[in-house]
Amino acid sequence: MSAPEKWKDHVDLDAIADWMNATGLGDGRITSARSLTGGTQNILLRITLDGREFIFRRPPPSPRPESSSVLRREARVLGALAGSDVPHPALIASEPDETLTGYSFLLIEPIDGFNPAEGLPSTHHDAATQRRMGESYIDALAALAEVQPDLPDFGRPDGFLERQVGRWTAQLESYAKVQQWSGLDVGVSRVADWLERNRPTDYRPGLIHGDCHLANTMFSHGSGDIAALIDWELATMGDPRLDLGWVMATWPEEGVDTVGLGVTPWSGFPTTSELIARYGERTTRSTNSAAWFGTLACFKLGILLEGTYVRALAGKAPMPVGERLHAATLLLFDRAERLMA
Image 1 (tube, rainbow, N blue to C red):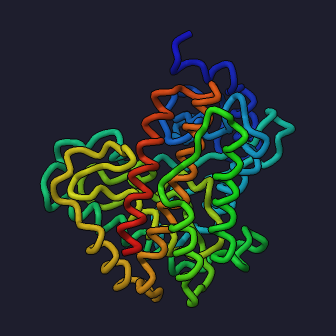
Image 2 (cartoon, one colour):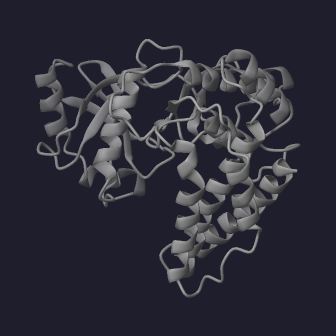
């Protein structure tokens, strides 16, 4: 069985069709199903039932203990965003209970668009269209910063900023249990101290996407407008300006791609400074602390990527991937130092 067809061992289409019939989403059998690529290891399929197309998503075949709860979390967020100005995949239905199939799953509307990290179509090579892509992307994050979703008991918004440095410092320290890892000598303590001393005092909780970069977007085929922010698995309640910081950490500088998102060509996208200014114009949230959020994002993302390098050293991840992400970590801490200046 070819790699794209391996999902067939892990999705019972007849059981899914029975559930969809009982839920009122159609009548009959699933007549087509094909695998889609995505930013996670989740199984993602485009299926057709009763003449209507759906995107089906379930956790990976070898799930982490929290995989189903993460998917249920994403379904809650997408449901809460319905009717908002935030471009997102429209939730059709979800099944939180694992009893039926052994896993939770959700169904969303297909998105008419493309993922820029998979390469820009020729229609999006010109500078004007690329500028619009950057502007519409930051407009989506600005809309998210203003939304007031109905999500009771979601995340831990109290003390969100105060927890960040300690949380990620502890994550980094946990890597020491792998003897092959010699540590991360890139001024981690200096960055952590700066973050603690300069923590913003104007915190106002809101919904955070949690993983904002261009690989987690889809854009319209016919324009530079964003079609959706995708992959909401890390969404939580905290300070939405951390999403802006994530953009600052991952946005190519003068076309240099720090974290390997693979968006090419890169000729007309706005600069980071222009994105920050536009975000400030379109939200009620101050951007005076943008450098702090950008530094925190570099700190957090660098530590996360270093984790894959440590796993590679322990023989649990491919070494070429680990080395590439370790190099990205070094660049992220360099960017943090420049943001702190």
